[in-house]
Image (cartoon, rainbow, N blue to C red; front, side, top):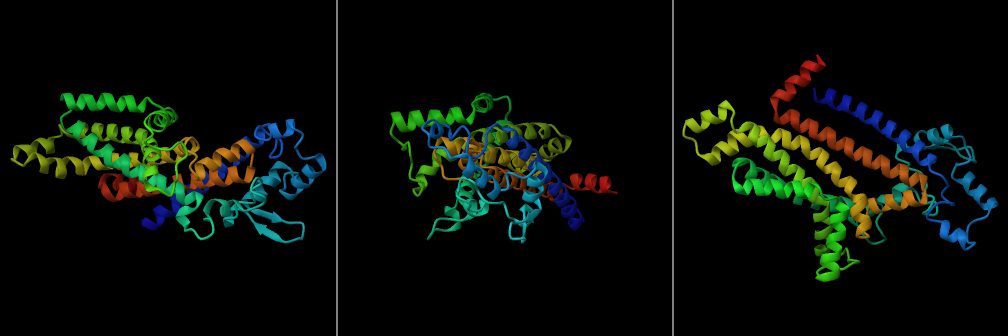
Length: 343
């Protein structure tokens, strides 16, 4: 059953990645301009520093942009034959193509390769993964306890204050919170630097908190709602009627049954963090893939846009598969429904 589960989810993941790649490919080619004549290059063109038409045609041919759109897409996904008659494999083999704005360096090299003498964790992907992990620890470490505290006594003054605070945090976009942190903590209080040194661990706290605030608030609200749905169940009243302590009732009878909805929501919360990287990394000049994505869109670096979109989509699909697998392992009811549907 595990092999069948993984096989079906893998096929679904491949279908999703193909669809995401096609939609992204069509959308980015619908944007006016090209990698050498776009919004980011307009100041250079106004100063007469743009490239001439002959060189632009050569670059178009070098990067395959003079081909029909259908062939550009198949060339990127499957592969093609180069000018020397040699076949090269595309994204299906892990080849994400040459970055236009990085002077022909492959996209995977730009994203995953660290500077010379550094480890993988100093690469763009490594920086972003570390920031997401730190933000996840903050979101889960604060969100679940706050949700439990609020849900255990839902009508108390503390619970209502927590609910109001969480609703307020959810209504604030992360770019507003990030700018507010820069103004207050960097400009007024001088606690952090406007351009931090990312080799210092303490400078990671503020971006991680800004990234984690919205998922933390949502996790707390889901935890609270999950607990409140179970507090008045018959087996909970029976456990209390048998004289079990409140702590044991909470840990054994309530949390063990409320954990599945919480784990299910952790997947979208983690995806929300990866999406938040686009804003947070740009605000704090963080050297991760979110900032690289922003720069690639502004400069119309087609292979970089497609490569980063594929990485985002693949990561989110893998998280969904992991969450679905954990739900089936932890809750026999979900496993039973899945097996009946498969039958």
